Length: 118
Length: 349
Image (cartoon, rainbow over all chains, first blue to last red; front, top):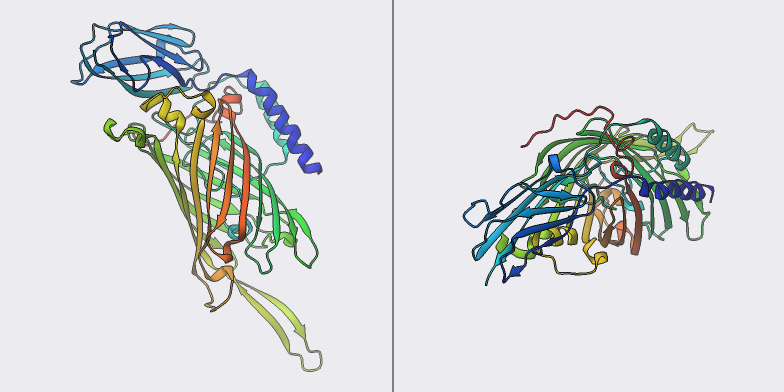
């Protein structure tokens, strides 16, 4: 029982420490939604992350099925939200590749697709 | 890396977690106070996250703590002993790619018709080098060696007096690089590990009787075989599905789950004695298949699995294992969650 008590104490210490630091920035949601089909071409891609990200070390690329860039300019970062201006999107498949540095210096990356189908 | 659940029949040679909890808390507190430098990630390969698993080890080097891992099962003995294990494992990166784990287990045994027993299993350490990472392919490969230190546990619960050295390989592969037409299959990943366990003693002789009139001595010989240890997992990552394949709009609790099936086996390959019609674990492949689920939060994860023995020598009935696991690189990113020497010698792009 003494061992269990000590383990619980250490666990409690860790649990109380959880709120003290930031974690990896994970993609929580996107607009257009990951894997979705949208009828109206969006003018901005919105990425919502689980942690704040560093603008200087975060990149987002949007490409069409032919590999041509569909993003128009640098992403704007506001805390956990990254806004990517888009060129006028023709109907078709698009791929989003993101790589961000969270405020505690963890790097994460990912990619997903969406389709514009009027 | 990951904490491991242990079951009696496949005990030898598999890393087993523990660090005394108060010491861990003290170490973490000290590191929490003094450090200031940045940290890197836990087990990521590109956009793939491999969670720490309960029965086998993930393929990465990381800063993490499993505290506790608790398992209950009936071992392969006849009659079957009932066993409860409480274990912990502390893993620390020395460099970005090289780390060490220290683990130990406290065991409580209920022996049918016999005296119950409790005590420590042997201390185990694992040294691991994550030498290859291909982010685009979500592929990780590591090599290392696990050492079970003899005479550091209690013989009453089966701790051996000899050391066991196990060179090992770990691999992980996510399916995210499949064409998008594969859809949700891209959320699957597999991991694997293989090791060759070498005991430091080939055999043990135990004197069973002495005839003082004739001077004859009777003894039992117990051989300590070399074992091939292998296992792995197949896992379906709901976090990966949501962030990289399709967002189904499910509640967040579902989007953090990783259903998986782990399997772990051990086969004697050298220094064995063939004995027919016995349940002797030294002479046959034993193992378990463990279906379960892991819930991945931002800074910790909780997992639970059933333990299903593949034969009677592996155990009796269905056991269970549960684990609380902390990502120290997220909890203490500037201190204990970062490598001691922040250099990398990893292959891959």
